[in-house]
Length: 163
Figure 1 (cartoon, one colour):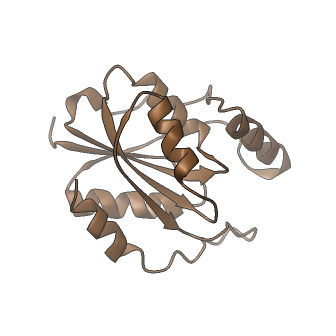
Figure 2 (spheres, rainbow, N blue to C red; figure 1 turned 90 degrees about the horizontal axis):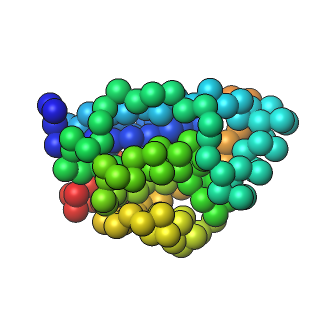
């Protein structure tokens, strides 16, 4: 183990990745980008995404990860916020690693909604939630351009001081 903190994320539009990389840089942490081979794009992908998020399904196509979360003292999870839940990709990672992780810090990027259901979901999975931060990124644009997520760094850095 080279570091004590692991930042784990999955990003759909790139906004969550940007925040995850800033988080890892700020904390000098290892970074685990989750790779999901599920087609989340287009009309069929949108339906698949909505159905899985609604019924709290998991992804069946998550690639093996590089880092063992059991080797870290601190785990920070970043996920886009889909409806009332974290993404199926992140949910799969958390379920697959429950025996290795007791508590997490959660950062979610979102366009609109409330974080209480997301917080409840994580706690219902049996995790101690040390802290949660929502970063409003706006709604994804159809032209493929990353939404303007504004200046999130001061709020993020304040949150990271508590980790």
